[in-house]
Image (cartoon, rainbow, N blue to C red; front, side, top):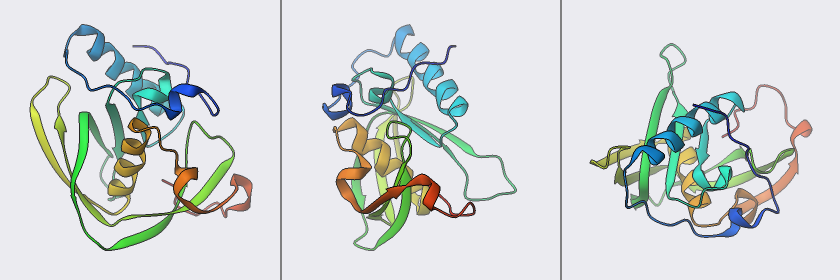
Length: 167
């Protein structure tokens, strides 16, 4: 495993739609392992393959709503949001590919995501709260969309109080 470089705006890969994964081979496993290590090192709670300059539909998310339990690691290949509630919430988001900026972004409160495991097995996740927010943010990356495209307001990261939860 190795830490990969996280590309930042205005790198063109961040604006391209990522390709579906069709081969679940050793190179994919290495990419996933590297993404997890890179996300943890950054540190972040989610990372999409385009952020490490690989235009494939792969995301990793590590987050836990319960402070007493360890965070849960999700690896999803070819993720897609198949259902969502009409209820939305506004929350503060940042991005490893847009350092120094945060924004208030409106997201669906609950979503259902279908995709595949790192080995190609079908999977379905029902997500809510901050975990749902992180997934929506990372799936946006796979479509060339950045949080700044959806932000109701954008501001410098140093303008946010320390105890603010940021996705």
